[in-house]
Image 1 (cartoon, rainbow, N blue to C red):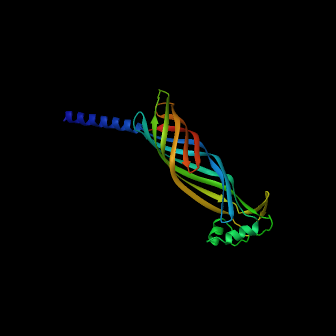
Image 2: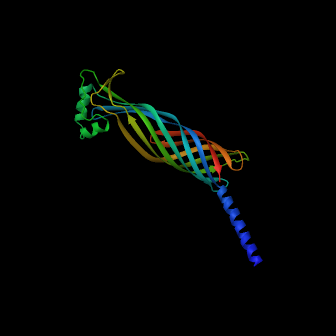
Image 3: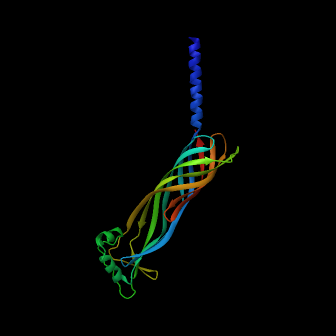
Length: 246
């Protein structure tokens, strides 16, 4: 009986030690990042020239949860919040206000188009070169959820540099002020124009580099840079995080 009890006690001790070792491979982190994305472009279609500028640069927070698989590899998930920021403007133009109205009226879904940009029930006016351009200002916010693999190399007792590769599912919401007539920068109200919003989302490749620094056996700090490749633009995050192993 005593022998059986010793065996059971030894088994429990071994199992507890193994569980503790496995738990040490899990980690949780909180970080601050500076996020940058944007660009500018112009497109003329159906007699309407649409152009826009986005220049988002803001400080945000990040939550990390991961598991160290072995000395060289880890798998990690993260959530990043993109706080609201006034980032740019968008405009539409034609020869003049009346020409812009005529071009909208010629669209297959005039009502739907005007509704999407806050111009339901409006009639744009202007002859010669008057009111040839209308302008709206934008604010963007959003979030992303990422899953990536990390490869650690050239490790020392104090530092562990790494590279990462994964995917990021992100979404953004743009909130736009009511369009106004824009005559060489002089803005005037368009009667009936209202604020409007738009949403966009995608899942794209994400990659980055960084280094983990050891503070003690359970706490590390991280400095890293990561980039999500979005069509012809990028979402860039550079930041610092604190990681806790448990």
